[in-house]
Each structure stands twice: as structure tokens, then as C-alpha cells.
Image 1 (tube, rainbow, N blue to C red):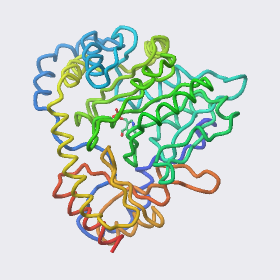
Image 2 (tube, rainbow, N blue to C red; image 1 turned 135 degrees about the vertical axis):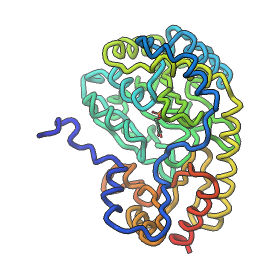
Image 3 (tube, rainbow, N blue to C red; image 1 turned 30 degrees about the horizontal axis):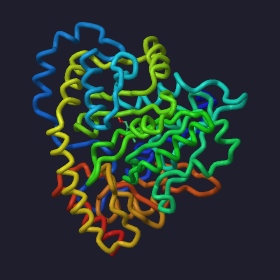
Length: 393
Ligand SMILES: Cc1ncc(COP(=O)(O)O)c(C=O)c1O
């Protein structure tokens, strides 16, 4: 059975690819999974009570756009966090996790042509994989722009030729970045938003790691766009409770942007969306309103980062991440390193090449492995020491 042509260039997803690489070999020691970015710190214990109190809500179809109470809680958070004022009725939509939102927003907002030609979708390289699938689904040409140590792990979209920028419909930018943990600062956002204004494209700001930072809270894309007086429909932001609140299984996030864009997203999703069940919307409403658990979560990650800095002290090319919960460690060849580590220690990490695309014969992820710091700290410490001794000693 032939796969539709538009998806024929999609490589196999990173995790089955890793299974094909490693699973026919015996691990060299206690198996430790440092591959998937699934948060493991505790989520607030009152979540269970809210579900129980609202259990009858499973008997109703949920409000598609998000309950008024949930939207109000989200806009209050946006205001506290970024100082922006957002209309809960027209500028917010609840999502079933940001992954589907990052995909569905492209369906709603990317036209068939841009300036009479095939549209372009810009994505950092390496990148969160849904960006490429969204580009394929809307018939756009994906342009993968290297995010490497030379540019502080943030793609230099401004260096692209003007004809590519004129065809650009959407530029994805993740900040803090997955996998490298870099933060786009105010100047970076200003340059990108000014470029988007000049070439008339939208910026999709994937900010789902915004609350997992070490020292300073990352500035927000919407905040900067407002300060610049940019077109309100220029920037669309995506946020999630998966990382902030250790609730990846709740599948709860939101998209916010200009009223026209959000109206288009809402209309499409009224037909084909998968709204969050009402009891879970009630949970999300309360979780956005609470910061105590988020501060505790950051404290736990800070401890892990400090430990990682100690363990990798002196390792050439080690860059302490500013945010997120991954290490992006330099190696010769990412598949070889993942294989050696598995065979000699049983530690499992993701080859960076699986998160990036080859452009002009270069894969900017090939010289890195991604290591998730989600396991309990003592287990993480054992894994990192084994990793360091295997690959860097
Ligand atoms: C960069 C990035 N964006 C979006 C997501 C999706 O998160 P969720 O759908 O759980 O909100 C993830 C999850 O791993 C991610 O790493």
C-alpha cells in the first residue's frame, strides 16, 4: 500500500529507529532510559480530587474551544508571566497538548500559495518532529535551518535568501529549544518578528519548556511582539502543562494569538478537533493557577543541572543548558556513540541525527547525543557518570 506522496519523505520516528538500532544487541549493564523527554517529577496530588469532583463531566461533550473558566485561568497566567493582556473569548484556544496544536494551526493558517508560489515552512534543525509533518500536510516546502554551536543553537532565519523568505508562510521557533536547551533572548525575537513583518509570515513560537529554566525566566514571543507593536496575528504561541506541571498524560496546552488567527483555528477544530474532556479542563484550569508546584519542579531540575555540570566539568564542548531538561552532548558520530554506550553500559540515549535532517550533506545533529534528565536524581547521576566514563574518559 503506497503512502501518500506528501508524506513519503518522512523518516521513521526517532524512537522506533533507536529500537531498530539497539534492540538486537544485549545491553552492557543495568538498562537506563535517558531517551524520551517524559517528565517524571510528581504532579500536584490534588489533581486526583479535581477529576473525582468533576467526574460527571465525562458524560458531556466538552466545550471545543476550552471552558470559559479554563480560558480565564490561562489568560491570568499569561498576564502574570508575561505582562500581556489577552481576550479569553477570542485570543485563546485550549489544546489537547501542544503537539496537535502545532500541527493543526498550520492546517488552519498556511494558505495553498504565498506570493503565487509554493509556501515555505521554516524549521530549526534539529527540531521537534511535528513541524516537518505539518509542513508536509499543508503542501509546503520545509526549509531546515541549522541550529548549532556557531549560532548559539538558534537558527539564523535572517540569513536565508529573500526569495525563500518571501515564500515563507510559517517559521517555527522553539524556545527554550529542544534538544539544546538554548533560550531565544529579546534581541533574537525582535529580529525574527521584524523579519516576519518584512516578509509577511507568521511565527509559531513553541514555548512548552518556558517554565523549566535555571536562572532567568525566558522572555515570551507574544510579549516581545506586543512591545514592538507588531501585527497581532504575526505571532502564535503554544504552551503546555506537560513539562511545566509534569502532566504529559493530561494532554493539555493552549494556543494564543491574534483574534483572526484564533478564529480560523477554532473554526477548523470545530469540525476535526479533539477537545480535552471536561474533567481534565477543570484540572488544567486549577493547574495554570498554581505556581508552587512549578517552583518546586524548577528546583529539582536545577539540582540536576548542577550535578550534570559537575559530572561533565572539563569535557570539551560541554555546554550547560540554560533551560529545558536535556543535555546535548558532543560526540564524533551520534549513532556510534549511542551504540557504544548501550553495548558497554546499558545506558540508552537518542542519537542527535534522528532529530535533524541532512541538508547539503550535513546533519547538524550527527555530532551530538540527547540525554533526558527526567529520571530520579540518584539514578540520573549513575547514568551520567557511566556515560561520561564510557564516552569521554
Ligand atoms: C519542543 C516540543 N514541543 C512540543 C511538545 C509537545 O508537548 P505536548 O503535546 O505534551 O504539549 C514537546 C514534547 O515533547 C516538545 O519537546
